[in-house]
Length: 536
Ligand code: N01
Image (cartoon, rainbow, N blue to C red; front, side, top):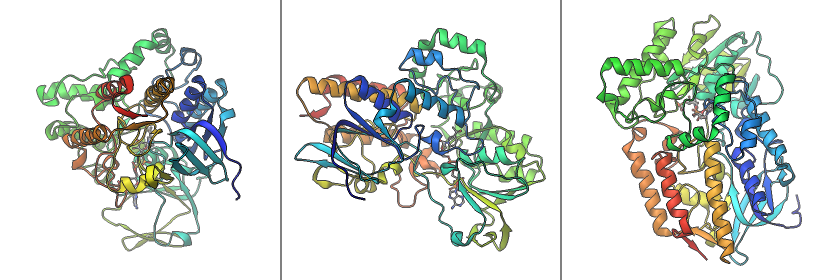
């Protein structure tokens, strides 16, 4: 395809998920001309692509939503405590429409390269449809968990059944009735799809390599009196989110989002009661039970033992329960809130295939060979995960000063300043990306955008053109991020937080794990007067 004429804008935004939507909004508020490219046909990002049966958020919706405009917070009515994919997608569309953001967005267009031009000091962005945009500032809103790992199984081409990926689910409804359906992968996506289709498929075969720790989501219709209380004082909720580690507050319970004790400081009875309360509250509440669950192996073991006991209580067959019980440090892989996932294994039409006992050998025309047995399938669903944090940007040819490639740089080890930018790539920012705090992604995108756009305004007022991390500050940030990561238990298990699911990815934490209050403090100090940057 031949290149179109070069379009000049102030800001280019890549991706129209929640972060991209807000970046486009902020750019408009600051009177920047802006162009946003999105590969999907709609806004929504994760909630556009992951439309598999059962897809649902696990942060309460009143918190998993924008905070920037009280009118928006007040007018939107969620129907469930944890909304499903279609409702969240409707919310994203509503926001895009309310603020007339679509006029700046071009859909079904994938950015293929972003190259910094030293002469013009601008970013030249190209797409798979021949677009050619020159921008002063480049924002990557490409998602933290958005680059799927494509299935790479021997013989897959020969398989004659239907194949789907949870992360690229088709818009048409899939018929499962009477069919033999296989699901490969038992992370959060696999768990949600398995729970949803267990009673719809003729037979369901769950191919599990690593079990996940699970907890009931405890979803229910929204409690209108609770909503009224929140809406009357939304600011208080948003403040509390900002004080919490992860940007969610367990609002539908009396449990505290700000833990103050070690699990080892309390008696066994007190601890058990605390965990029981958290299981009743559901969702992500165990993350906040004690201060040291992710720091101390003994504390961690108390929660892991409790979670395994709950698995045994819910699964009838003790052999299956044992196979569904993880043995690694709990929370070092994502806890998966679910609805009736474990009960699915009590059904006659559902079987667990333990890939640790019998690994997948290859696909055939009719199904999969595990160990030396062929299992016939009509449908296979891959829920095999993502190249987390770096993957989406690595798939674009991004080149900074002296043509250095971001992907090549990151293959040597992850670099960033404040999880938003890196040296050698001036005026280039990412949202919710590598080294960002592990935090409610919608609120984090707002926080990061606000800091960056305010900085751009200040910079331009001072007649400056370029903002870039200093070498010294970047090194200190990388060191701090890795130091904190190494204080946690994450390096002690095999997980995507350390890049373990991607062969060849350098092993180091891809998230900042210091908690939002610390992250915010570091960011605010750095952006104060822009003293921490090279601004020219
Ligand atoms: O991906 P995952 P996900 N053969 O990486 C298995 C968010 N999310 O899409 O661990 C066999 O967790 C792999 O096995 P193993 C949430 O942050 C949130 O499920 O490599 N199996 C693992 O079981 C979540 O953490 C919600 O041994 C293979 C699975 O595939 C993140 O997205 C819902 C395999 C991948 O699990 C990612 O979740 C959904 C192979 N060759 C997602 N390769 C909410 O509830 C991989 N696997 C909000």
